[in-house]
Image 1 (cartoon, rainbow, N blue to C red):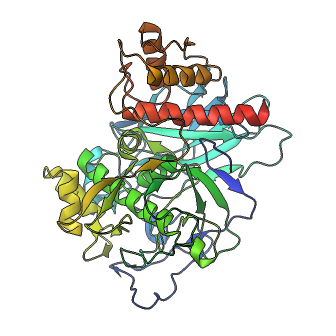
Image 2: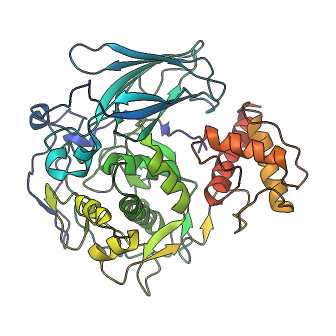
Image 3: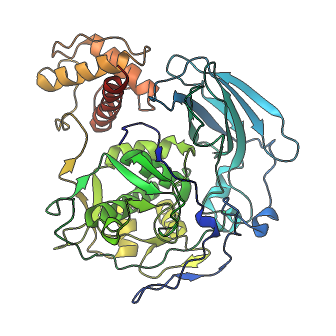
Length: 475
């Protein structure tokens, strides 16, 4: 298992769940009512149909804009690639070059603005199913010593910052996972199979590999990129937080109210941790944690862009899940869009947006749909980190072993990300440590406070573990 920032595949040929029509539900399970039951056409991985093609595409010369930053790394070790060239083009029958960018020592481009449809479209379910509420752009990435990569369909929402990862394969290191990363339509716009209903609480076997006495946030999960029975689909090892960010960016809009995003993120995390806790697929003889099929789980898309607003929320609450009294396992919180598909007793995504706009908090939104007994719980353990969060923020004047630990981690990261100043691990949080923390936060999309809060602590730990393990493999 490779602890990379970007998803790593296991050998197999790629399958697509778009060609799958959900089988009849198992006994006691039913599919939710779908107002428009059209399935994706076989061989069409876009989750779209001829119906989509007839919809209105918002003109590229829109006066509203969104933002994009590209992060380029080596797929071999996830080290940043400096001086990579990124060409951004419009989509459609007559693409034209809009921007040409290059990466800095952290493998990142400057943040640029791009035309996007008005934000109001993404907040209105009637408009957002008739007019694509986001703009799409294609990217061509090249760097000396690496094979080129094309990314099609990067999504830009008005007022939001899109973060597009790009993992390049060194020349001579074999073929890349794909010469083109094709990002399909968003699940709220394209046509995807509805979720097959399941009980929200699963029976568990005490003989599994997972310690069933407690809920543990895994370091990575294995995503099967297709329906469970598709043996040709690839498996990908994905860091847990990266998986949640990818799914949330694929299934809700980053323009939605913050409480709405938080409610949906909590539902996604609780569902995912239920799959981990109950070893749902492994107990059926499969070698993965979860699938990318919307009929069975959530839509995860290899190589897609995420959104900064969603990323920040995930980093703040990634150790949370949803519980009910006297129930040990995370609740399998299922949902539907509430526009094409109706799902009584589940959360509807568009309904959660409406409640967020009305001033509901995240827990009020969740209880509106799942009932008053639902509450937010915290996992007892987070896997794959050197040390747990100290419980209080670290800032100028802090001292002790926790400060020294974070200084050692920052200094190790600075050997790969040279924009971060080196730090002497003396256990005293002084101006030099503050500058290093601020530089780290700037690179990894966190608020530049110079203070180590919960999400900064765990992001530093995540990057440190990746950097040091890669050094052990290739050093």
